[in-house]
Image (tube, rainbow, N blue to C red):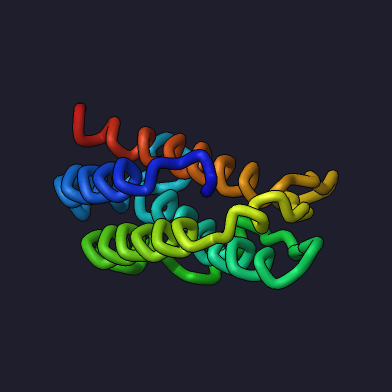
Length: 155
C-alpha cells in the first residue's frame, strides 16, 4: 500500500470535517487575503484535486505507464462556481470524496504502486512519479490547504 495509514487518514478527514463545519458561511465566502481565494474556493480546489487524482489512482492500475492530462486549477474553480455553493455542501462533498479515495487507495495492488505517471500542475514541466509518490503528493497538498482552512477555526 501507499505510505499512508488508512485508519489514521479516515480519522483525520472526519476530524477536519468537524472543524471545517465550524467555519461560518460569511468566513467561507471571504478571501483569506485580498486577491486570493476564499475558503469555498480553496475547498473547491481540493474537490477538483480529489476528482483528478481519483482518475489517476484508478487509471494507473490499468496500464504500465499513465500520461494524464493536466488541469488548470483556476479554470476548474471558476467553472465550478464554488463561491456560489453553500459551505456545508462543499464540506460534505470534500469529506465524502476523500473517504472514497481512502477506500480506493486501500485496494491498490502493491505491484501497481510502482506504475510511472506523468503529471503537471497548470503548466510544464511534467513530473514523472510512481503512483505511490503521486498518492503521497496528493496528501501533502491536501494537508497544506486543510491547514490553511483550519487556521480560521483557531482565530
